[in-house]
Image (cartoon, rainbow, N blue to C red):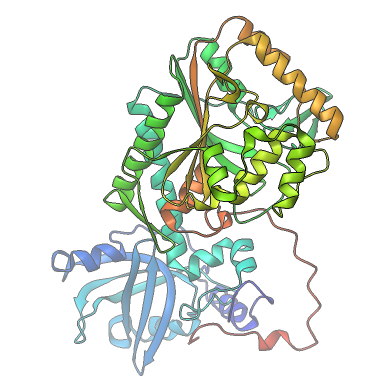
Amino acid sequence: MEGGQGSVDPARLAKMRAMAAEGLDPYGGRFERTAAADDLHRAFDAWSGRTVRVAGRIRAIRGHGRMTFADLEDATGTIQLQFTADGLGEEAYRRLEWLDLGDVVGAEGTVFRTRAGEPTVGVASWRMLSKSLRPIPSRFYGLRDVDLRQRQRYLDLIANPSVRRAFELRSRMVARLRRFLDQRGFVEVETPILVPLAGGATARPFRTHHHALDLDLSLRISIELHLKRLIVGGMERVYEIGRVFRNEGISTRHNPEFTMLELYQAYADLRDMMELVESMVHDLALHLTGGPIVDCQGTRLDTTPPWPRVWLLEALEAACGVRWLEVEDDAEARAKARALGVEVDAAASRGHVLDKLVAHFVEPELVQPTFLLGHPVEISPLAKALPDRPEVADRFEAFVLGRELANAFSELNDPIEQRRRFMAQVEERRRTASEEIPDPDEDFLQALEYGMPPTGGLGVGVDRLAMLFTGATSIRDVILFPLQRPEPPAEPAPEGAAGRAGAGEGEA
């Protein structure tokens, strides 16, 4: 059965109370382990004949008269336990009747190998460390209900060892990201999550109120503007790995709460950011997979630099025949999109229509790691323009498997032009009634007026990077606790149904 449903199992509850009645704590205290399951398998010869103390969760129980075997699972794997009436004594052996799947126990005994060749701990003593009052999911059938897996991630981790390994890999990935950047002289910083003005991106923020200060605040939608203030202040290489919040839709690529890596490097530009992204993802591949090739969803992805550079307008024309430079205004752009079967807002500007068309026709074809360049300045308000093409931003987006992985600019450091861009956004907000366009950040503009060096900036979606290395198809599979709707209230159980709760996998 799948755990997480129904109520506490009355039979388990009765066992817990029986333990307590005999003066034994069903929720025992500290237990000092001397070996892990993986140790006993990998180095059996070194452990054979030695007394060890192991602890973990019971995943299987098999009774054979006056002998009982159990599989004990810890964070490293599973080790078999052997209980015998002669080895434990009659009273301690009788107490095995209190044992259920899912119970957390500690055991002490001698390491040996059974006639079947299985490394085993012959238990001399054991104690309950935490009595499980609900049946755990079956190891054989697993936990397959996607909503339940994400809502009760602890059950998912118990039932599916591959899920635990994926999140452990994510942790190693983030640690390696930090090491990579630290070795390049970047300094990790922390900037505010609660902000008076949520800027640095175009997104609807989550809003709240600080009662002591009587101040309306938002959760940040980007880390960018605070990090660039630090560049102004003389911190020449800074980064932050932190949570960002956007009050928008949920999909396999989007979660309202997600993790970003943002970094800024003074005296650099887009070319430096390209080299950094290529080297960083290649470095991750070498350390996480052992080589430059990442197998993801049946596709072999080569992270070896240099990655291909694709110009946006050329790729669009090749994909759907649109010669964008011949599109004269917003109305013609919207008409072109609709003729191609792409729905756009009635007030969408020429630049935003281009962005929609590229997302529809070009991005899905960018399977191998690729840089997409040539975005319009209109939708890149914080990026410098190309010197010879003022309508084109010095910007790239990095794509893998058709998903955007990173976004980078040569950062705009002209405060006059930045103010003009912000005011153009305000005019767009007035025209479209968009809730996603923020007010101009006057404090950031003031910081630019003190002088910000030429700077390369980069944002990387850490969750999407984790999807790449774990092979996940949904961003929710690499976020431990993704946001979900509340469960509907449970229907009251029919009278007498409590005693018929399912017992899970192979209950003893």
